Image (cartoon, rainbow, N blue to C red; front, side):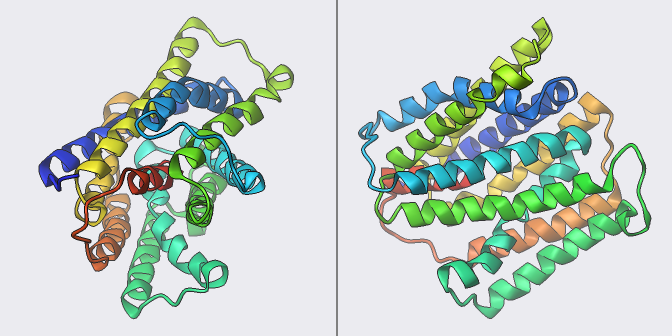
Length: 307
């Protein structure tokens, strides 16, 4: 596949827009519907898009590591629950900023789980990134007690989601040693749908017409975002267009501002710049390969972003 930076960047920016939209809809429905119910419909209505992507290669469900798929889906489901709960209680931009800590946790977790030795550059990036978290925390007064309307635990939950997201990324990389990316994507979608369907009889809350429309849109937007991400990473090298994934903060801030009257503060913007800057630095530190981008590599990258 050719390296088309402009096309890849535009597609990735568009993907982050739809991701911001689905988070806004999850925020709307999260105040009246259980998180598991929202996630069920998200996975159910995004499944056709996963099948569309998988059909480009081969739809293969045969696996040699079903336990690995099951564990990856359980951890991924926990990550999605944490996103829905935190985005329901936090301003969209702040939740988005804290979710960008995933690459920082990935560096830390790679030491005990993958036995890697991060370079000095990566450790400096991690320190810069977490200093951004401290700036956000100080700006919200978390160290001295915050506004009761926004509970302190929601910020820690959003931060913890970055760590859980990093763990799911590592599981994907481990599964990729024996499984194809299409198999990983399909089992994730199927297992998450089944796991969230099981408790529905016990937690079911009948959505109103507006909520039902939002639930369908959440799944559709998740699927559209995944297709756009796939096209983006198939169009250009990850290290080249990766920084454009941080455009999600702009979309989240704009939607939060105009849709929920959430005006970003200076501390959030400054902390966000530190967190994003550390992530971009780590991306730039990875030398892009001149080899063509394989479809399997693209699907693996999309799975990592999706988690």
